[in-house]
Length: 468
Image (cartoon, rainbow, N blue to C red; front, side, top):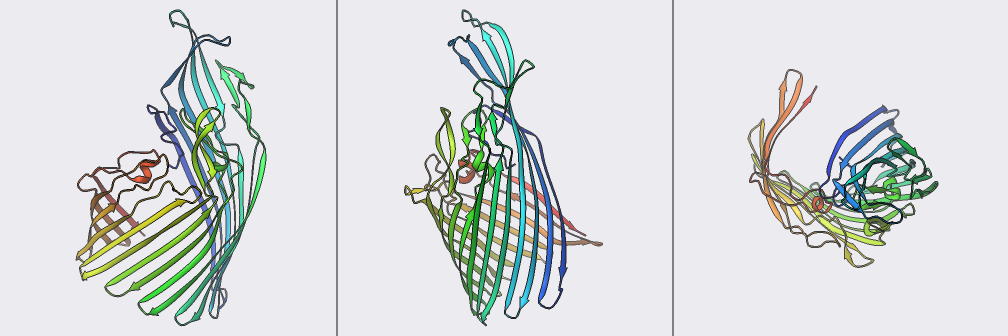
């Protein structure tokens, strides 16, 4: 659902539902082709996206608070916590394509604005107890209104340019660049906003404080990429590319304040933008029987945004921080080979290693070595069968607080009819079984996000599509 939460943010016995989730996307695009021999294409696009999310968390927690400081013995039960928010994005993009001799140039501009407005309510039952026998003397129902993030706006405007140059018959040069101006602002925000005690509104509840002052921030960024592709012959080539990246922290990373009854998650308005340099070396071969693509990459990142355990308002918290410098390196390989006309062997392999250079520790959320090995069989022109094995190795290169996950293998089988024509309708159907032998396994990324322990078992599926 894309909702930040799950363990350890929810109490262990919490019941969490999503009573209403809504997503709307509207877009309109205008395109003109071949305005002239040199002016290949002009496009303009506007889009609007609205996302509304409501969550209901029934934590099932109760706390007995001893008498003291003039307060009687109390039992405080949290009945529910209901965060919700509306997200609106409006944007515009225009792009022009030019073909000039040995140059193919793409130039464009885009602008978008994101608006956030959210609220979290917390319903509590407060029972005043008799200190002698713990009987209930009086019961109060309190609703506290809080802000998980301040009301805020995020703006981005960018210009980009891309050029493909044919340097020689066997050598192409690709260059691109982009400049972005990003600015954002947020409203001054109190937490709690206010309380309602047995129907009586209290605009200045105990503990109220300014959690975010009104603030604005600006980031300017430039990105570039450059690449070379050299063709050895008609069936193989080698490529090299280098790029610089820049990412401004999101609203959630800057201002997040998630409190769902257990561990809290906190953002930092003063986060620095992430910056990185990326290098990739690739090789391709494509014959009638073999298609092979392999890439080796080495990426460096500075001021990477990550979460670290900490303390906030005397409570355990996950706090967004810049962790200094990190490197990511690894490889990807994909290939398919025709054993005979009706039978193809295919596989993919990927590996990535992530290291936080500041403390020479492993980065979190890194997938282990994994791949797919499969066979596709075409007994008839209209039918494709696919048998595959999904393989993951053990992941023991883990960050502090992560769990090791063992390696596993599971098998899938599917039957596909890709082109079935009925009148003027073209359709395709696929039926299959995922995890044929009902293997129990843990996905490293899902497990360490606290979402689930075991992945789904044996699953049957039917997929179809229609084209008119």
